[in-house]
Length: 451
Image (cartoon, rainbow, N blue to C red):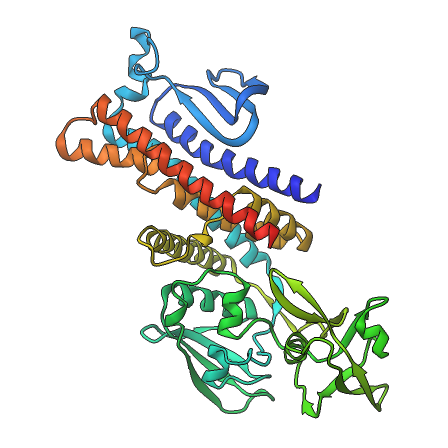
């Protein structure tokens, strides 16, 4: 129910903002708006505001919306109202109405990111755990306990890294770009000498953006002590005698420096083989034999012990002044928009995996998960989806706002509109392209859920 409610709220809000952008610009341009609808199909709720000719509607199917304007192409228009029809407006006015919807989504994202930046949130400190074996980070020489101070591309000025989330954003962006990321790191305790590390992420450009990407990079989580948390009844951990609060010092004689390394040792253990764990419990040294249970996860055997591993990472309050928060919101929205366009372009020419396309099932899943994590996570989820919706609608595909803008560009260059014959052909082609994208997205959704 949480997932369903969070999904419906997100969908309704983002569609309403998008259509409200079209509506407000149409009214500002002097166009008569007949209906403002959130959802399609039979209206389940409708109302009018006094003195406003527009009918406001909520449809049965909440998978989109529309703004119906007075238009001579869609029906007869009284001579006295012809100047209010959409088709009789200037090219600039028509283009402004079309672009206002995606622009509203992008402005919403700016506002949401700025709000979170201003309110602030506690985030994990950018202190590294042990890199995954054979990963890019391990080959670059990064070590457990190091703090990342700054990050940036080879060509750009380094930016301050305030949290582990900041670091993951730089990693994601550099991986998508397929470029190297320059890090300035400092060993603990703080105040020591810093050093520069280069992560070569050129091989990541075609990868799907998921947890496996961060495993390949090698930086999956912030530093956490190798301390046992809650132990499940009947688990391998309970059978071995492990208890919450135990600090793991070594496994099979090899030192364990943090929770990430401990999890990796468990994950890579051989089926049925006992491990010798050296522990510290209440100041006393203990040695226990632990035999992880191997389970099949998405076709891959993974060992588990049935206990929470690690302490909560150290956190820092990340908060900006109002002006900095707004600038940060604009910057994050712009960067996400550029990355989205580049990713779509690469998928179109086959340089990036089509598995990066997500549909309503994945969006609903993340809506529920983000809502359960708290309102800040949910607001950030809304901002991300709002950017995606804005950019998607600006794609030059018939049926989308970007397709209409292409028609207007043709009209601007040639001085005449697209003919009805070509308009019909392009609309049909756009419908086929959109259905193909939706089919791929739904296929990916089902695979993710089943996996």
